[in-house]
Structures are given as C-alpha cells and as structure tokens.
Length: 417
Image 1 (spheres, rainbow, N blue to C red):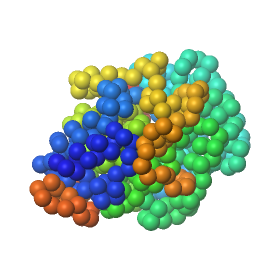
Image 2: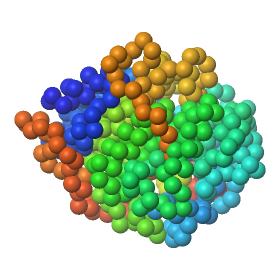
Image 3: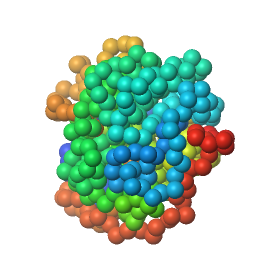
Image 4: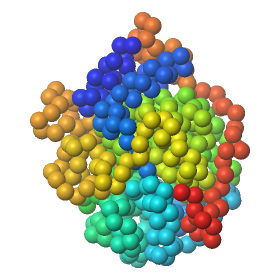
C-alpha cells in the first residue's frame, strides 16, 4: 500500500502527513485494517519499543460541575447516577494513588470537576501533590483541574506537578455544539499556560460524539501544532442522563483507525488509550496496544474500567511490557520538556525536529490549545486519496458495558487497580 508506506516513512522522520493522508487512514476498509495497524505499529515501536506506560486516575472531586459539556456525566444538569463528593483530603488522595502505583502505574492523574480551580483549590491540590511525592519516590503527577488562571500553573509546578492535562476534545469548528459555558480558545490558553510554566502538556480528544472525519483530523492537527507530550484518545462513554446518551457511532474497527491516524500525525508522543476503551474496543483492545504506548489502569473518573489484573494480563499476552519507573517514556529528543523529567535540553515536540534533524519538514504554525466508517475512499486499489468517509450509522448500543464507578476514591470500597 503506497499510502501506508508513505505514512510509515514520514512517521520515522517525524514528518507531518497531509490532511488528505490522515483522512484516507480513517476511510480505509475493514479488509485493510490489519495493514493499517501493522503500519502504525512500526512507527509506535520505532519510538517506544514494546513498552506500555500505565497511568492511574484519582477523582479528587466528583460531580457538581457548573459547565455544560455534553459528553460529561459530571456536567450541569446531568441525570447520570454518578458518585458526587467534594474534595478528598491529601491523605485520602495519596491512599487512592498508592493503589494504582502498587498495580504498576508510574503516573497519577489528579482530576477535579469544575470550571477551574480557585487559588485555595490550587493550595489544596499542591498539598496533595507534595503528599503523594513524599510517599512514593519517582512517581509522576499530572493535574487536571480545568481552566487555569494566571500563575496557577507555576504554583502547581513548584509543588512538584510534572504535567497538566486539558483536552481539546473536538475540532474548533464544532466546539460550540458540545460546550457553551467556555470556549475552545479558553482551552487553548490553559494549555499554553501549562507549557509556559514548564509543565509537560497533556491534551487529547474525545471520539464518538457525532463528529465527521474532518473534525477528527482537525483536532489532531491542532494537537500537533499545540505540541503536547501526551495525547489521550477518549472514546465517548454515552452515559444515560447526558445529552449524548444515544451517540453509539463507534465500532472497534473505527477506534483502531482513529488511533492509527493519531499515531501517524503525532508519531513520537505518548498516545494514550483513555476512557471508553472497554466499551468500544472490547475484545480488540490488545490490537490497540500496537498503536498506543500508554493506557489507564483500572477505573476512570465516574465509570468502571477493566479489572487492573486483566489489564496487566492483556499487556503481557499481547507481547508488550509494562514501562518501569526507571524508564523514560519519551524519545531522547523530547526529554527535558516535562513528562516526569525536568532535566536536559529541550527537544522537539510532536513531530517537531531538533535543530539537527528533519530538514525539509513543515514548521509548526504558532498555535495554542485547550474524551465511521466508509468504503473505498483512500483505499489502495488504484484509487486516489479523496475526502473523508461518511459518518456511519449508530451501532447497537452496549449500555451493559457502561458501569458507574462505585468503588475507590470517594467511597469506603477498595479501588480497582
């Protein structure tokens, strides 16, 4: 396949695919799916070997959010029967984090619902970060607290945070259809603030909200320009009681194509399979490890995930290995930008070559930032690369796979890790 050979060559050189090439990946047929996975897998193994980084979520404050993000079970007006609680104490959060670390996680992601933290909230989270760091040597800590005000990223960095997550979620052109209480530009500004403070930027997307192929390519190209160190790819969990409860557009094959496209566009970043993998990838999860080099262990913010033991068995059975705390996640040219390493010279970013590499590559535009399937188009039987595939019809709703989290943080029950 000429397209896949071209994309592999570009991925090994950290060269940006064209939009048409990215769209063609999404438009490949199921007959070509294994070829797509194999090609993207070459790029993944070149930069990350067979290592899989494990991350663990701790929901510091659940529900009660004033924002109206249509995909979120914690949104204003949500009727989803999720856990609702206010801030965990630092000791409680550290205890929850310890369970994930004991299960093999090397990064703890501290998440809190809400538009953004107050200065008092930043003090609270900073104390939690210090507590976790004191009790767990070498752990990476990522904070995800919403929109940041001036100076807050610096304070989190001083407290020991390694990274900050704030997802773009969807394309700029369709963002207002998903959320009205803040803007895409607000998200751009927050990730810029994290970058400027020396935090490793983590920003990703949510697939399955009814978006087109063009929307997916738009958001991934925006992420490439934003240049995060890690890109979480969420697949919508259609919670009953939310506006997107009926959005069941994803198939396992569609999810694999999306992950492959992200890998080709951002070849040397940590691509993380995030929320919804159990719901939409299902028995195809092991194939996704050939595309992504990072996953969440155990449960998510408000939903249950696969058992932690099953995650570890899946990784081993697929021929991969859990990344150790003493291993550096990112390729050498990116080390020093964050992601748990605050030493060394700054390297190039997602597809951005260092000064000695990448002659002839496209340069990044100055940019900032902010959880379907068709036939034929872009196939390799003599057809030229054309537009994107149409949005597929909804697949059968698998509501049996959507389970609200009732254990771990905010409860008296042991966490899943």
